[in-house]
Length: 223
Picture 1 (cartoon, rainbow, N blue to C red):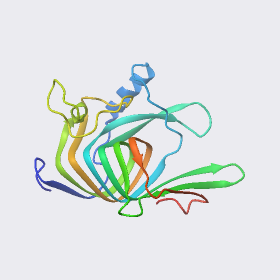
Picture 2: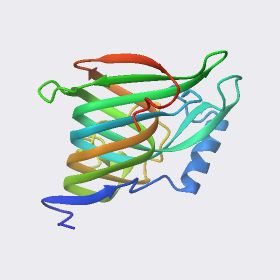
Picture 3: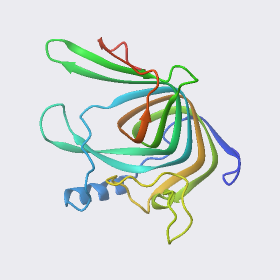
C-alpha cells in the first residue's frame, strides 16, 4: 500500500472498507424515534443492484449512516438500514447497469433493467452523487486518501473550523454521526463494480444511451 498522504492507494477487491458501528446506528435510530433527526425520504422495501465497468470520481468521501425504509412491499411499518454512504463531487461511469426485481401478482418475478454509458465516449456523468450502499465489490485506487477523518470534515465547504474537505457537502437529511469515522480522497477509481444499494441521490445525473427494459424472471439482473 502506498503513502496515505501522497500518491495513490490501491486495494484489490475493495469491499466495504468501513461500516457504521452498532453504537452509532443505535444512537441515530434513537434520534429518529424521538423526532430529533428528520428523514429526507423513506427508501422502498427493495434493494437494487448496480454494476459498472469503470467509475472515475473526483472529491470522494465515505462514511456510515442509516436509511429509514419500509419493512415490506405492503404496509406502513418502517425499519432502519445501516449503510455506507459513498459520495463524489463528480463521477464518470462507463457501462452502467441497474436492476431491481419485483414479485408481481399473477405474473411472478419481473426484472426492471436499466443500461447506460455503454459507449465509452458517452459515459454516464453525475455531480454531487450519493450512494447508500449495503454491499460493494470492486478493484479500487485512491489518490491522496485520508482514513479516519471526521464525517463533518469531509464537507467541501470552507468553514470556520478548518480547511475544506475533499468530498461533496453533507446531504441535508442524511442520518450520520458528524464526528464519526470517515475517509476521503481527491480521486477514486473503481473497476468491475458490483454493488447493492438502498438509494442513490445526485444533483445531476446524465444517462447517455439510456435503455430500460422489463424481463420475466431474474436471469436479467445485473449480477
